[in-house]
Each structure stands twice: as structure tokens, then as C-alpha cells.
Amino acid sequence: MVATVLVVAMAVFLVLTVIPGDAARLMVGPEAKPERYAAARKALELDQPWPVRLGNWIWRALHGDLGASWRYPGWSVVSLLGQGLQITFPLAFLASLLSFVLGVLLGVASAAQLGRPPDLLLSGLSQLGLALPEFWLGILLILVFSVRGQLLPAGGFPGWTGERAWAYLLLPALTLALPRVAYFARLTRAVLADVLLLDFVRTARAKGLGERGVLLRHALRNALIPLVAGLGLTFGRLLAGALVVEQVFSLPGLGRYAVEAAFGRDIPLLLGLAVVAAAAVAGVSTVAEILYGFLDPRVRAA
Amino acid sequence: MSRLLLGLGLAGAGLLLVLLGLFWLPYEAEALSGPVLAPPSLAHPFGTDWFGRDVLSRVMAGGRLSWAVAFLSLAGGGLLGALLGLACGYFPRASPFIRLADALLAFPPVLLALLLAVLLGPGVGGVAAALALFNLPYFARLSHAGALELRVREFVVAARAVGAGSLRILARHILPNLASSLLVQATFSLSTSLLAEASLSYLGLGVQPPHPTWGRMLWEAQAWLFRSPWPAVFPGLALTGSVLGLNLLGDFLRDRWDPRLRRLP
Image (cartoon, rainbow over all chains, first blue to last red; front, side, top):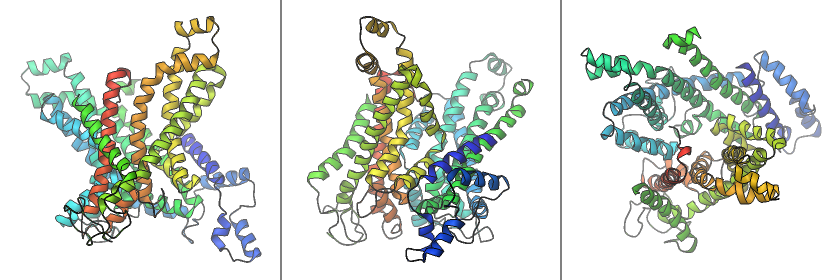
């Protein structure tokens, strides 16, 4: 896991050092005196060769210091990332949970009666999930729930101490969740369709268990591992990729900082974001692997 | 069959709208041609925007760059990817280079597009190059696997035995066998490129104003959402319709030509 993060960080570092554009010039302005410009170059370590910079950066990163942001003077990258995570973490959590619950429900429904309406809904949903641009879905949801319905705020965030703070995360979470429902539904249905043919299901039915009991108590358990794996994957990806939706709803999360950093060529911040993204994906899959042992005793033995 | 018709219809409508727009627009895309924020009417089938510009004309004009970038990035990424994959698959000594494509796949897609957009700068060329790099690994992986599998088959060995050179074998014997799966991938890549381009221009990192693109139009229209939904509805409809159509078309072609390639959920 640490290796993955390190490799990604180094790759991004190398890519970003190739970026044309003089960060020091950007910082002090075009009319600054040569001495100030030289000082800025020194402060940004631009006078050092890149291997030295990379080494310094890794050394400091290992001590929990990702440097100072260029775009937001006076802020350290670590504190900006912390601020962003306060929004993005709950948002990604809510969105993955929502898509998970809806997806499993739809999957069970469509496995229970293959080929009938839930199935059609499912294939329609998965086509739309692939084709709908997230930002347009967000705009449409704003139209329905904020402009017409006036039920939920259209964007922004009042801070966690603000009134009804969670309501500001509902629409973004729904926007992120809807295209991913079909993924969980297909996963559930695929496993259930296999399991329902097995002997123990026939036994359960033979001893008089209703169809609901068979599906929920016996068959669904077998889908838990792929579902948890999918949940982990989705959560990790959302942490790193809620960017566009955060922009739609003006949420000051990690994605907002990523876009701002891209505009401002804020290399320390971009690097920090890449580290968080890699760590999120790697960390979540590690946690998921540990969970397998609890969900399936056979994995523990191995 | 209905998938083919629906796919062709949707993607074709999206593309035709844009192609027609090259020669004829109902109004000039930047002209103030009617009342401000009017709902759809006969004179303005898609309504008008906050300056009184005709939304239909802007959708037709805005699709130009979206489709052009998508096709450019498909051509660049597909060509380079297929070359890389074929070379790495056919010549054992080149095979380590396929890891380059794997490395590109390992990044979170949105972050990759963002980094590339920063790296290559805004503008049509930069965005197209960024999205080409985005498409490249899929073609590389596909043709790599194909070349690996085909190079030891009898007809290839026979061709070599009668004296065909590597280039001839690659071009005449291996590539034609991969053409259908590459074409299926091309359909899907075209749709993801359209989507990715729209996302980048929505974020302001794509093609820069004043050129309208579907993504940028949606970003601008969002600010006026509380006054009128129409400028935000139609560009999105054109984009989603085109992407959905391409996906359906790709699904159809895949089932028809290449059942092995079935996309997992």
C-alpha cells in the first residue's frame, strides 16, 4: 500500500516538473526585482535539480509535511487537504452507501423475477449510468429538487456547524450515486443468479422457507464479498473523483481544490491530492480485504 | 436490432445536427436573435439564452469542437495505442513497453485527465492530446493481447515460412483479425471522449471561450437555472443522446462481431 502511494507520488512529481511555466515568476509578478525573483526561486527550490527536489519532498512527506500551497498563500497543503476531506469524505461515504443500498435492492428484485420489469429498469439504468454526464445529472436534479421543488439547497456549504449542513450533501450524493446503482444491481443479480441454482437453496425451499427468506437469508450472503469489494472500489474512486460534482454544487471539497490547483499550477497541492487519491484507493482495498475474513470464514482459513 | 436502430438514430442525430451546423445554422451562434431566456417556440425550437442567442444554433455550433476533439483523440490514441500494442505483442524484445499503457490505466481517470490538461495546456490541441493519452491504453492492451495470441497461429507461421516480412504479416494477417474488436473499442472510446471533453470544458480546463462547447454551455447555463431551465436542458440532451447512441451502437457491434469482448458491469 505504501509502495503504491510512493510510486504514484513519484510519477506525478516527475510529470509535474516537466510542466512549462515558471512558478516563481507567477508568484512574484512580472515586474518584480531580480533579487525578489531569485529569492522566490530559492524558496520554491527551483534552483535545485529535480532529483534533489524529489528526495526532499519525499523526506518531508514522510514526516507529514507536504509543503505550502502556492495558490493559497499561508496555507499548508496538509491543512487544505484536511479541509477538503471534511466535505469529500462524508460525500463519498453517503454516495457509495446510497448506490449500494439502491443497487442491492434492485439487484435482488430483478433476480427474484428475471426478465420482468425490474430487469428492464436495470438495463435501462445501466445504459443511462454510462451515458449521463454527471454534471448534467446534477443540473437536472437541481432543476427538480431546488428550482421546482425548493426542497434542497442548489449548492454551497455552510460548514459543519451551519444549519442543516447535511442537506447540502444530499443532492451531490444522489448525483454521484444514481449512475452507480446499476453497477451494484448487476453485481448482486449475477451472484444471485448463480447461487439460486445451488443445492442448499433447493434445500432451503424444500424445508418450506419463503422466497424472500431464501433470497435474503441464504442467497444474498454469498454476494457479500463481491459487493463489499465493489463498495470499497466505489468509495475509493469517489474520494479521488468527485471533482466534477463538487464543482456543480460548489462544494469546497478535494475536487474543488484539485480544479483550483490545476488552474493555479499549484504543484505542491496537486501532488498532495495525488497522494490522497492513491492512498484512498489503496487504503480502501486493504480494508476491504480485511473485511473478507469476517464475511467469509473460508478466506480466513487460507 | 432495435438497439442498432436506436443507437444509430441517437448518435446519428447528434452528429448530423453538428454536420448540418457546419453549413447552415438557423441563426448566427453569437447573434442576439430573440427575447432573453425565451422558452422553446417555433422561431426558437430550443429557446434562447440569457443574451437572447438561439440555443439550437449554439448546440449545433457547440458540438463541432466536442465531436472534433473526440474524433481527433480517438484517431491519435487509437493509432498510437494500436501501434504500441502490435509492436509489443509481435516483437518479444519490445514487450516491456506495454507497461507504459498499464501505468496510464492505473491512474484514477478524472485525475489523469486533469493532470494531462494542466500539462498540455488548454486549447483544442491540448485537450485532444490529453484525451488521446486517455484512450491509448485500451487500444494498446487490445492489440497487444491480439498480437500475442495470433503470432504463433498456423496462418502467421505459414506466412512467415513463405517469406513474408514482419511488416507485411502485421498489416495483412494480424491487423485484419483485430479490426472488428478495435472498431468496437473505437465506438466506446468515441463516447468516453465526448463525455470527458464535456467534463473538462465544464470545469473550464477544456477548449477556451469564446468557442462554445456542450460542456461549457452547460456550465454557463447553470448560473441562469433559476430563471430558465432550457439553455441547460438541450446541450445536455444532445451530449447524452450522442453518448448513449454510441454506447448502444458499440454494444450491438460487440455482440455481432466479438462475443468475447462482452463488457463487464
